[in-house]
Picture 1 (spheres, one colour):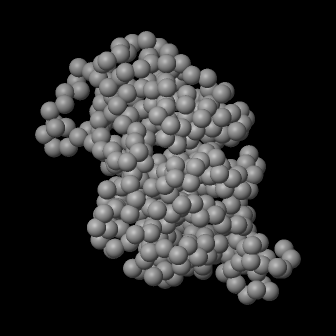
Picture 2 (cartoon, helix red, strand yellow):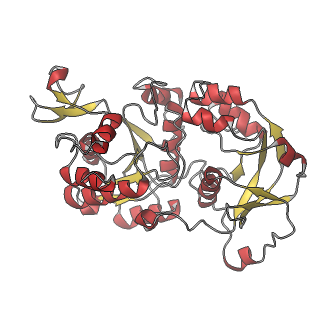
Picture 3 (cartoon, rainbow, N blue to C red):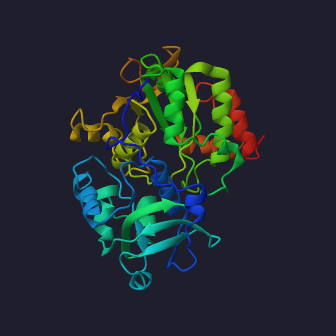
Length: 386
């Protein structure tokens, strides 16, 4: 049985060296670069093929094309620059066509970079094009502005993965080749992916199950890389995911995996990026809800829906499933959305993530119409409020 969908660009990339191949690499005499946590996660996502067709950090042509045109230089859709930034001083010490050792926080070589390009970039332009704002209060822009002034481009080769991730989700870390194998073993031809950085609440459950009515299986794929400081920690969220899947979902129709990359909070641009990543993991469909990957009021509620219209039907090769704002309606007696419910807003029970976090911090249990009680209990206990 063939894979249900090809990787982005036609082939799943593998830039990971293993066994003797990795052991024979001598990094001791190479120039070095220390990587941030986000850069290491990007490095690993490139190596395992989650960022296919990228083989390394972007060179100038790809970077500028992504910023200006939402495409790689070869025309393939891509919306978020994947880059390695260093200071001007560090860049001056590096020579083109060298192999560079990439180090983790413990100064251990985890990969090598085949350095092919060094180039300056316009941070304000990137902020405006990718995030739609130059406001430093935006978390993505704030991160961008503290990066180095020079970008390095070239293919990478991963020597060793990081092993310091929380055991709560280590067993759910699936490479794209592994998730594709699981889907194939299950005989799934239509797989819908769901991106989240929050615990699954009733609105999430509703749209996931609506999608499940039309496909073979659901790939619940929460992001567990770096997020905002006020987001609920990944280990606590994982307990919620496991619990709700055990109690409220069909066991043979859901696969839980984790996405070990950082949130950019780039709204509509990140919605496309997330869809492409899930395509690489083997999904044929992707759920796009209200304010996907948004933060504050920087994006319109459905900007992440509209951006898909900027690509041809056969360009992304993954089908977006758009969902409206969902809530519990007292009059309807169940979950609904503005597309299906005729009743006034005072009949609706809908809470923002910010409101729920405030309730949890004060020791309040969110209403059952918003969150399954088992999930709320885990969150309260995890925040020391039970």
